Image 1 (cartoon, rainbow, N blue to C red):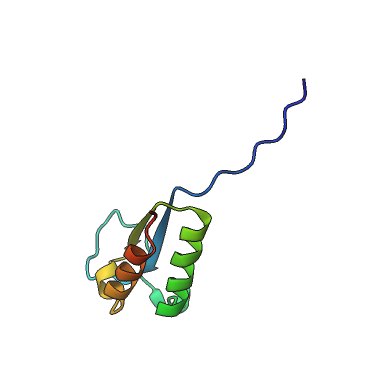
Image 2: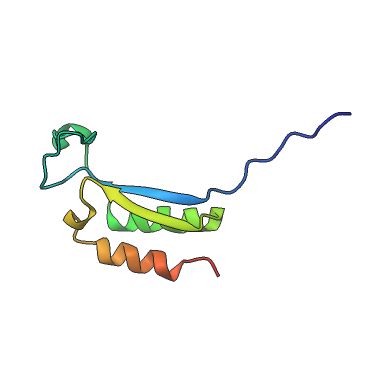
Length: 88
C-alpha cells in the first residue's frame, strides 16, 4: 500500500518579534543588545501585511514579543488589526 504524502497543516499561531528594544537587561535574555547591527524594525504597514497573511494561512492565534513590544508606538494599532482579523 502506498501512502500519499501528507500535506503541511496550517500554522496554529504567529509569534511576532516586533522589536529588540527593551529597557531591561536580564541576564538570561537571548535578544541582541546592539540594535544598530540588526537593521531597522519592520514598519507598521509591513507588520499589518504579515498579520493578515498569517490569518489567511489559518493562524488562529498571534503573540506579540520581542525585546519589549510596549517600546513600539504602534502596538495598539497592531493589536487592533489582529483582533479585527481574528478567526470566526
